[in-house]
Image (cartoon, rainbow, N blue to C red; front, side):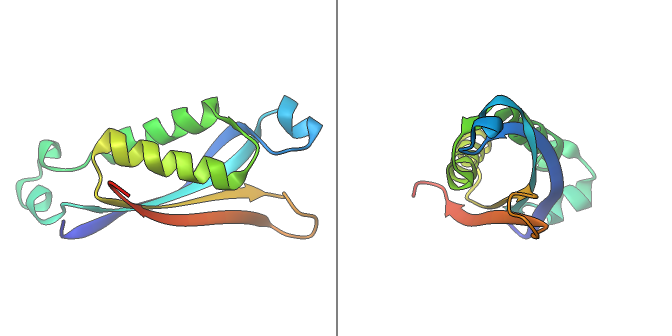
Length: 119
């Protein structure tokens, strides 16, 4: 891989949290993804078949998160990374999931991890 793709600010609503109100109503999370990708060959050929389809990756991430029902932000972040590594045969991925307004007087809280395939 000779480059990276960044998907930033992907907003998805899901059930996340431990409080009773968080278990009943979906709330927004904001996802950032970063992963190595072939860039030189797709740029040279201008052919999507040579590139990672980041539209599919973003769509898959959004579907997974919208259907999830985790208590912890840490669990959501780990499971999302695992799914994307497996589904798209990525070698490595950095996933950051932020929960806006989760703590009073804070814009958001976030968990960020970097995972490699097979680990």
